[in-house]
Image (cartoon, rainbow, N blue to C red; front, side, top):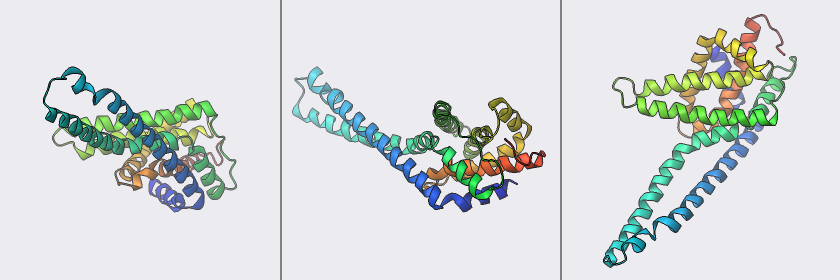
Length: 238
């Protein structure tokens, strides 16, 4: 069931409809990161660089090089930080377009079933922010667990597998069910959904390809929700 859902999601991943969502997501992500970069740069140059001259006006002229070195170090640090933020920022922006992804999968692969109902704008924004928090939290926890001998990469997969599996499945289910019913369904099939989350975590671990993680995860969980619903005797959940 899980592998079937993953294969079905991959088959749609590079379709024209998915590419359109991906380019919108990537464009907005780069715009946000560029804004963060220039905003930080302006703040740093305005407040940090004059600091040495303001507080130590009588120091030798070579001390001015410290400002140059500090600027380079800050730039490198910001570049690393932005690289780490690409995944989470992509997740929060993609969260605004996940209903588009789900609608494509439902229309193309389940044409005889009633279509799902998109989330209203405010709940959709709240869910995208929740995705952002989940990705940030998962990676922070995994980062700390990397310091524990014998855990390392396993921590990344376990934490992200659980969190991503839970959130993306509930998203797919809530297109057809009230929130409480979606959560109850997820709890009844917690093992299957966790294993599906591990597949998503594996996708997330691949550089560059991980930018497509929200699209892949949403499509995969739409398929998994359909399969679980049919298994439970619901031929067309609504």
